[in-house]
Image 1 (tube, rainbow, N blue to C red):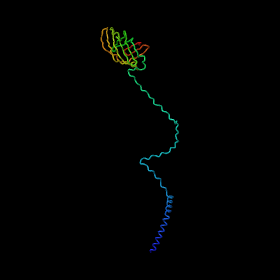
Image 2: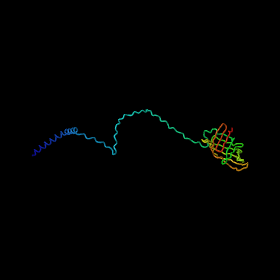
Image 3: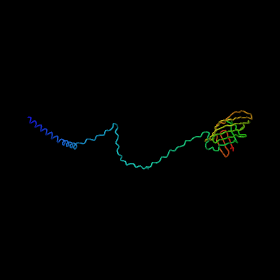
Amino acid sequence: MVEGTDDARSSRFAVWITLLSVLPELITAGVLLVTTFRTPPPAQAETQPTGPVAATPRPSSAAPTVSTRPSTPVPVPPPVVVPSVVVPPVDRPLVGAACVPGVWKARSVTGRPPGTGITLGLVGEGHVMTFTALGGGMVDNGGGMWLAGQDGARSVKVLTTGTNAFQWQSTAQGLALTYGASTLVVSSYTNDVLQSSGPSRYPDKTVSFSCAGDGLRLVDGDSTTDLTRVP
């Protein structure tokens, strides 16, 4: 019994030795068979981030666009700067009144005092008006300027003395006169009898004007004054 058992063990040991010697070849053959006959697994989808799936752009079948523009960039012109219109101050006359600056002496004055229907005219020496090129001016009545007229059977006279400074500016409507410091005194007479006398000041107004040679005419709603340039 012991001897038979040893023979059996020797036989099994020989079988194991044989199997171990051919095992690498069997493994290699099995791998080749599996590789040859197995069905390839489906392509694993690429993991996409959570959220809406972006559409895959399809290649455009349209022909490529050929640019017809020159390769050299076209220079862009600089923006046009429109200068702002600056209105000159009141002490600067506007262009168009170049004949006005100078010294002028009144040779004819006619007008109607406000609130009356009486027409008065210059008697004797007239006042002197000075217009500076910078828009300043002065009315000088000297020793006195007389205006006289008739109110029916009554004679009416007005005497103005003193000076009145002003600023002037040429506008679309004419010469804008803005009066300032004044030493005027106005006295009125009826039939050569003094009726009133006191300080006064010329009212601000805009007068139309025209120049002709050495003459200057000023016209407003109440009066017309013709002046001659003083050399």
